[in-house]
Length: 553
Image (cartoon, rainbow, N blue to C red):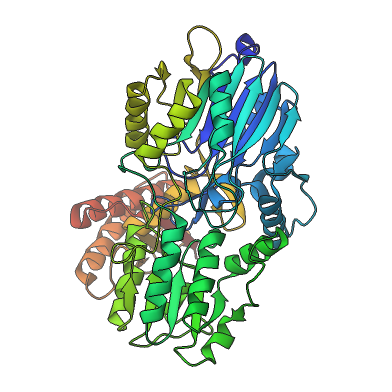
């Protein structure tokens, strides 16, 4: 390890291992007096750099250095990028997990779905409560977001108070749950806040993020004027939005169905925690298809174009129940997350080809962000008045802009962090004092592998350059007994590239025959690889994976 923790064990430290210089995959550590707590443990979604992988996780190898010293995991809320990593790592961590009732209910269902029912020590705490954790006292402070029971964490320590926002906004009409507890934030600010670790997602957006109440009004308008079947796709975790869709459907005389496993899981958890009390039982997607086309609304997963989500399967004609026809309407009550543009546009284009009316937040105000715009950030800083600002939950450009904003608001020290840095918060000169191991792990099928593992690199080469497999039959004196057999999936086409394949075969024969002595499997394999590698580079500009198989006859 490149950092001497013992030298700083009496200082208050902040170590982000995920969610800094990126949006998603949040994992934050705080250390003091040789004790540590973790706030959130989330997942991210893989891009094209990780073929065959859908989910990525923060690398937690640093936790080996503090083994036995981690007191607990405290969850701010139940979004996948804040709690979705727990089923993958809970056996290794083996510490209590503190969560509010809705977050706990959803986490328990998630664990059960993974075959882990009852194996995690999930401790339910009331919103607004305080948790004693050794050197830390974690106070939950209500903030609004696009999910129930979002709680900022005010960490009280002997070195000062750190206000860890998680994801948040100031919504004057959140529809579900209380408004943000600005009174308590002001009290904390007047008493003195050492540092804020704050969401940066919408730092470039002027004004405010808008209210769920406005979205509800516009959903009612859009569903009332729609003809045919209506699908509304949104984030399953946005329970207030689901409630708004229910109310809009009822106002239009339509029943409500759910399509997507995560929607059933979230709505069941919401009801258990006391939300959606007045909602009628949902129809299944099959039951909705038995209704007249103008008498149902289907709430559907897939607003980010996820490959296995219900909406993507519908447009591909692969969904077991739902079919759309020209004249139906799909409402996107969500905004495209940066990086998901290609798959979202694919789904929207396919819907348009089918004659489906596609309505997005650009055409109608049917979505508001769950993250703070600039005016909300300014208001937060005016309430808590921190001495140190550490922007997180954003790409590099977001963190840089957030740092400048914090400085303009009078914050003495603003630090641009990245995953793996160690930031000393206490003392006269707060700042970055070292680095610890960080990175990504890829969920590959049922295995967890480093994101730079050889299997992932090989898969990228196969995807980009294909492979060439050469089979040779050699007799006792290492002489070819037949022509080489070449197959080159993803590199060469048997018919269109027949001339190249024939020339490659001749070059392989020549290379084998030119080996006058020191015949061995290894020397022949290497000679053939060199021939194939050179020809693929010269003729194709490609570097495929090359496999040579030798059969002695």
